[in-house]
Length: 404
Image (tube, rainbow, N blue to C red; front, side, top):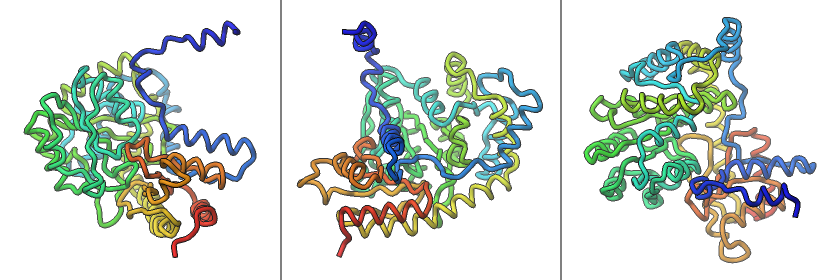
């Protein structure tokens, strides 16, 4: 055996990383890329990012930051201008009294979530994770040495309720991770129910980590709602993980933030000082300027939301004409979460078999719901052109048939 091959096979991966699963969403995206390299016409419905370019004025703010020499280290908590801009933005949009000292910059929403979880969880703690969940949530819990306590929400239409949270809390429960608008279902927890959920957690001394990366992608009549709006006695138990990736189509810029009580924020900043240190300096500047340029920023978000709304209104009914597909109308984000259990039991044993069949036969790439804690479902992203969506539906009907 080649020495290099043997060394690679014998590499002692840590127990923690060994227990973690690879991201199923990135695996599906890689499958699409591989097919394209082979020369196939691929319709990629795995994409978890906006298909729009970053608004030009945000790019110009980054250039302005570079021209001003913002190429050095910043505090681990982020530039004072960045933290102040987040505070001002939440005051303007949500009438939320967020102090700059409660804000910390992070390298995207994902690091915000890791910072929050790693700074509060101990090995053996229980963490409530409503299913379906974003694929990374349970892996963060595993990384922290804590235990996932999954809450099945199918009986409530994939909308988490305060009663479900109350009945799931154990003596070891430390944290609830919640995401609304939800990836992968697109469901939105009503603001009144969200408040009740936090009240239940606060009563039991359980903290809440809310992933609000799709905050502004809630469709009419729903309105954007942030847990930062809660009164101080409830917000003490909450960490908001925010991101510029979806809202401003800035996925590659890796810019996010947390909003939490000052003690939690200091713990997260301490952790970050030993990991990524801080997000890119001139990116922080651009984000701060964009937040303070509130009207133009919200207009850019509104334009994207209008396009997602139009796509949703065409795509979801069209998907429901495919034989064996069933999908409720999402209320936010940009995903259709399709129930394909009607197709199982014959040639398809599990939903991954369906996804694999679509990949190989018609080169339509989707994400298996099992990775989201929902075997029997597929996640289809409509963050792509109407032309691609129409082609995808045509291929699906040609392969699986149309409903009579």
